[in-house]
Image 1 (cartoon, helix red, strand yellow):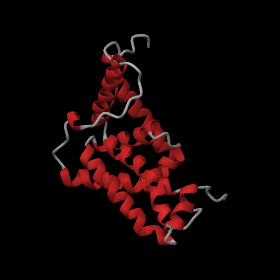
Image 2 (image 1 turned 120 degrees about the vertical axis):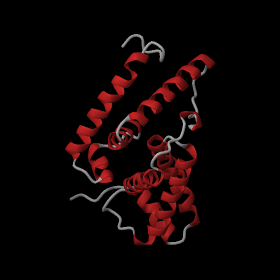
Image 3 (image 1 turned 30 degrees about the horizontal axis):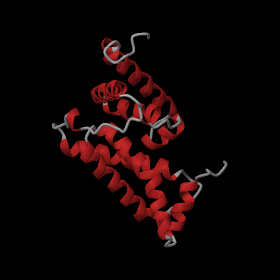
Amino acid sequence: MTPIQDPDAKWLERFAAGDPRAARALTDSLAPRSYAVALRVLGDTAAAEDVAQDAMMKLWRMAPDWESGSAKVSTWLYRVTLNLCIDLKRRRRGGMASIDEVAEPADPAPTAPEQMQEAARVDALQVALMQLPERQREAVVLRHIEELSNPEIAGIMDISTEAVESLTARGKRALAALLAGRKEELGYEHG
């Protein structure tokens, strides 16, 4: 088995050895990804910030025990992030954040109408994602938004690659059905 090449692992080793620059490099590299996953899974900016912060704290605590080559640091962090999201949702059972509380991601579109169109698409996707069953939503977010490979997702979610494929396929079909009636409104009139 070929050892996994992971530049984040080198930074984590340097952090564990006391290099102060390593914490900044890891935070810049990994915290936004953790936050993005948490936001897509939870649909709540404040909760996503808390989850991302907790995940990074777990990373700092386990740094001295990290075994390079066994997994990518980002894969480990995605798994921790998802577990924290699941734990939070279990504690919250019953309440869900409004889509109005979800911050709009920065959009570099040059015109205001294009920015409004993109915002409507993001909102529609987030609303549709929140209607998916939890495991489908997690798989779809990791595969199609975070662009991880199926084997990486399988490791994060602790399921088989075939189960990932099934979850993402069912999730994509459900999203398509949920958004089908909004094609023209969202600017997809040609397909």
